[in-house]
Image (cartoon, rainbow, N blue to C red; front, side):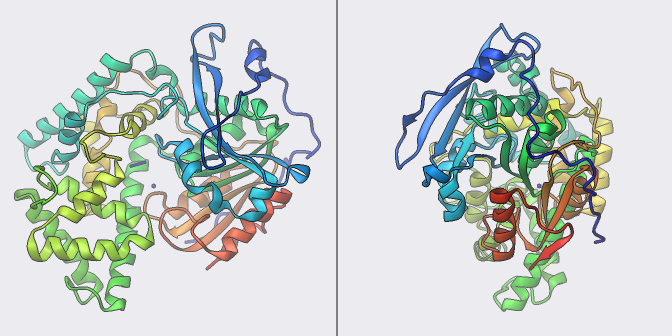
Length: 491
């Protein structure tokens, strides 16, 4: 996605670890029986393609190939199975994630699991949704998302409608089928194709939503699921964006506290002064874009906010954000903020983009109902701006194309209980910018076998971030299917 009192889950309805998985769904036998043809694809990795139906209601119709990668287990004699992963988004490439991060899972897991990633349908190398050209996305991201008058609102609406129209024109056949429900069904095909009786899975951010939907549809096929940086499935599309904007405000305050404490802040000597400086910078940039020494683009307010948001995802980026804000506030130079923004939306140096943005919008727009018109949508943006003055407008207006989307969602937001599933570990980070901590509390409370593991820290997601307590608790669960005590907090 562009991501307190502890609520705990109860462990009623736990699955028998020896229970037989659900039978193969009718008409899908050939998909479940396929054996991937693995081929070396460099640096110890193996790659393959797994076929799934484009439309599960028509399994004999058009098929699509899912791009899959694995780092094989090092101890073949004690191999448990596959650890399937998803890095989030939606729109993030799971193949790229495993190439980059597979060895970060640690020796214990790498000895006993194949670390597996896949590009979900519509993403990267799996029948990707492609709607917009590089210049079109440049214009979309630079558009003023804090409209001050009717003209600016109409310009924003025009960009949102053009985005939706481009997807209708260039990806109409795929749009009805890219949602999370179908991606979760794909995961069960992958489980079978990988040779696993039950699924072991790590999902981050949006990957928690995907994992929860998997557990809801296939509860008896769950071995161990880690849902890190959880999404609350009960929220509407705009409620989610408003809460996410508040999460970025929380993270920005944490950054400001760190900046002041470290004594490196050249743009404020108190937390409130830092926040006021950021607000002033954005207000000025709304009227006069910052300069950029990399190319001909101007750094608009929208791009500046995006750059700040990117740096808040990872605490290790905070020193970079200090430098970027210093340059922006003292020299009106937005080059560093633009580089951060480009990284967030995967813009390449040649001006082209990955399909992350197109896929993200396509999946989000069909997953939940959206407001019927820009007036209704604008009310959510106004609400967000009141509670999140620096991020509210930016986050909410960013989803505007969904108002004009050519495909209507078929499901409403609802709690996910996954009744009958084995224990599912939900990890929440208290000052997570993109997936607020209370979402993890809520999801763990909804799941009939939910177990909440809390990281009292900063940044987006907790596992793979180096905290020993989180790592040990998560690894033990993945290896032994033995979850930590519900309500455990790591610092």
